[in-house]
Image 1 (cartoon, rainbow, N blue to C red):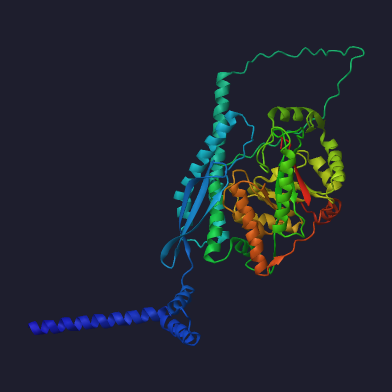
Image 2: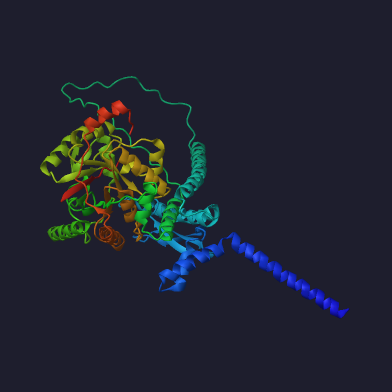
Length: 557
């Protein structure tokens, strides 16, 4: 009896082992393992690679499943001026292992004027802290779960989901603000009830005395458009979108600028890429700087297009040194050159609005119509000026049009303040009348938004400029984005502060890399827009849409 039981057990084990062998063979056959092994071993016999197992590893890694997003982690870091901002780390599942791929940092969500009141500064710091905290909460909870398992190379899908998520949050934020406004209104009405009895005007008009000068009514001034409120936490959207793009580039073993170029050109890499010309700030003007020049905010150098980036930056450095020596003779000169100051004056702003004029120099005011002559004279006197940034308030649309028709064929007329909200600009399908736009990658802006906007501007023969926002960090992705998107210029500020110099160094490195690979193309000469001809084309097609640059300052913008 015992012998029979042992025999039965042995047969069962034999059956089990045989069955497992059959299952294993079927499993490997279904995954084409024998076929793949035969292919690689036959090839290796003739190739005789020096690293035998390294060759096998590379061969089979190409057959592995594409990496997918595994975790997103948001955390608080400091920006270039010590304020809190957001960093996002991306980890992917790569060949059954979770690996941290890269991270991105996005700038702070708002811009505060340099000479703002202490109360405004405190309120901004409090809102900034809360916005970073909300962004971290979005990332580490909702967005982490929403994007898990997605391909980082599918930027369109990722950005679509991010856009839908933000739209819901923006609607919630709008409802919250309206409720707070209504509550505040009710509180004010309860505290200061409106009196039912009002004093009627007498109807008597005071007559002017003989010989007294009669003041003519001033031309009404269009009020500044209300600032679009920033949704707190929105920086999570832009930071994730950028981090995903960087992750895809890393996994594809290519620099970010090439990955972005592929995205823009539908995965067809251009044979040659042009470098964006840097706009380098060498002088900051305005209310808080020495002298009486109030209208001008920044003076920037733009190297000639026929110079390399390296030569252009070296020339800017030399000019900057000479300017430091000259200005060093003045009293109370700031110790650092190239600091892009967001200077303004509330009292001056009120004066300018009341009078409907721009304060060109201290005590000298010009109307919007008179400003046209100011800029014409400026370009006649200094023909090296090839760009004016925000020469007028965006509310002075009629004068903007006149300025474009008058000077558009002589220099670039760039809009910056009117396109702060990239998402809104894309939704409106309406580009301000100008030669080009300065685009800043902040808040809820996504990589897909940059791609769409630059394509739109390219189609209309307008230039695009990628600008560095306030509170920038040491993340040099902005330079890669500018090269990959094919922007005409990149506005990085002055050649000072580590986070800016890092970007200039990245610009030099990309130029050197493109040169070695034979992909660097020489920049085109400047082509300005003749708006009179463009208007004729618009009517037909029904469209809606060393040199110097000068950025002007008008607080109402």
